[in-house]
Amino acid sequence: MKRFGLTILLFPTALAAQAGADSVAHPISLSEAVQLARRNSPTTVQAAGTTRSNAASVRSAYLSYLPTVSLTSGASKQSGNRLSERNEFISINGKTSYTTGLTMNVDLFDGGNRLFRLQSAKANVNASEANETLQQYNVSLNVKQQYYAVLAAREAESAAKAQLDQATEQLKTASAKVAAGAATKSDSLRAIIQVGNGQLALLQARNNLNVANASLTRLVATPFLVTATAGDTTEAMELAADSEQIAAAALRGPAVQTAEQVYSAARANARVSLTSYLPTVALRFNRGGSGYNPYLGWSDPFAYSQGLSLNVNFPFFNQGAREEQIVRSRVTENNAQALLRDTRLAAQQQLTQYLSAFRTAQQRVEIQLASVAAADEDLRVQQRRYELGASTFLDVLSSQVTLNQARSALIQARFDARVAKAQIETLTGKDM
Image (cartoon, rainbow, N blue to C red):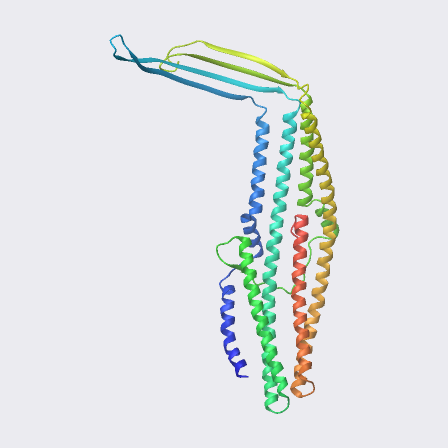
């Protein structure tokens, strides 16, 4: 008993030290956490960079219709010494020579290569934008899961506090009855064990809350510790759309749109490979001149030469390279088509799984709310009966264990409902 008394005295200090990490955490809302994570996550940053790179490819595809222009200019001057007849070195200053040139090239016909490359580039941009949206929702899902883990840890902390308070009151009652000779010493010893279990539960809950806060801080990438804001966790979870609307949204979700655009890009690339069987027509113009002048030709005119040429190129045989490229592009197209089909089927399968999990969790929350209320009332009745000598302390302990289990099951059911809803939002690309 003396050892337990010392533990009771030291326990509040241990709790205060462990609770310090959560007390200094900065509360943020779920929307703020999602916004920060989307901005700072490496996956969303990489996805946005891919979109910018593909957009640059589209600009290059448009500019390929314009002629290429290059300007050249150069100048040189020779100088040195020569040996005279008197064996003396004489300095020589040579003339300054210069060259200038202008070249322009434009493809008049390339078999549609530029057109199909433009279509492919646009499809790649659409695919990268859809993938960027998908990555944003994946990041949102990770943040929401961790945010809900913080809420669950905080609920577990409250439940552990209630468990400890109830165990402490039971210890007082059991100690008084033992002192009065109305109960055996075993009751007080069991009450001590219950208080210890409550202390351990509270310590573990505090530790889980601190770890959850640290994990949430990493996801949102803030230089300071953050935590979830305290909210009403007793309200029922609902979806803002019916099953048909959710199913239609799932078939147009970010994952499906990404697969569709990847397939479109693969088809365009397959058409690009076919253009190698067609001839190409290019127009070339060049103009240039050279001479000797210290001012690079600007002071005195000099002769220019210019030329205009029309080139037609038909690759009659290139050792099977075209055929190999066509086979590879068609294989890529078939793979993209199969991936699109599977992505759609996966969306249907996952939607069924997530909706079932959400509805089951909803029912579990309602059932566990009733169970917690019944278990709490049962514990109150058993404690009163024990005080009056109408029941044993084992009955009180059994009721306490039942209440603890009901509270834990309620916390898990709420967490599962929140996560299932977040998974549906990720699948559909819409906030529900």
